[in-house]
Image 1 (tube, rainbow, N blue to C red):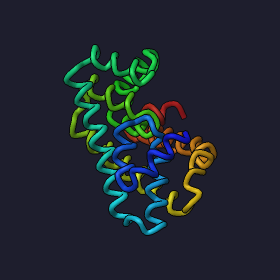
Image 2: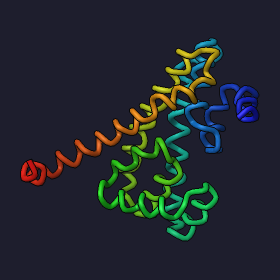
Image 3: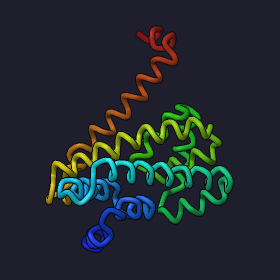
Amino acid sequence: MHFLEHLLLACGVFSIPIGIFIQFIPNELVLAYGGFLVDSHDASFLTMFLLAWGSFTLSQIGLYWIGRLGGRPVALRLYRYFRIRQEKQLRAERWFEKYGAWIVCLSLLWRQLFALSAGVMRLSFKKFVSVTTMIFAFWSFLFIHLGMMLGSNWRMIGHFMDDIGPYIVVGIGLLFLIRHVRTQPKRFNESA
């Protein structure tokens, strides 16, 4: 992690798009560093937010189109490159079939897996972009703000994620449950 921190520090404001496009630096760390830059008055919140949100959206769109145009053969090669096992890829595809576009919300946790799978599964591009822009706007705002709150302790975001990560997963799970109940109320009422 030491090397990654030096990379962020050396790139300044541009560490946000570089870190997001490289996709090997934890995005929470990149965004927290952006919040630190805002807190230290080296950049405005709006600049950091737009850089992060735009970078996330563009990187996800790129992965989507690679999956859609290249299909499963290209996606399988990229899954290996990103160290994503075939079982995870198959599970993601089943989730797309079951939950539809809302599964893209899990891109917060596995960006490459769900964006590529959305393309392979030929999810509607309009739906994909809608969910992607919404979820990454929230993610960018949240972690840049947390980085501002942490200030020079922005590196602590990893410890923070260990504490809050389970709550994020539960929140996303609740979104899926609410969506399922709303789309199939008869099934829910029959089981009660």
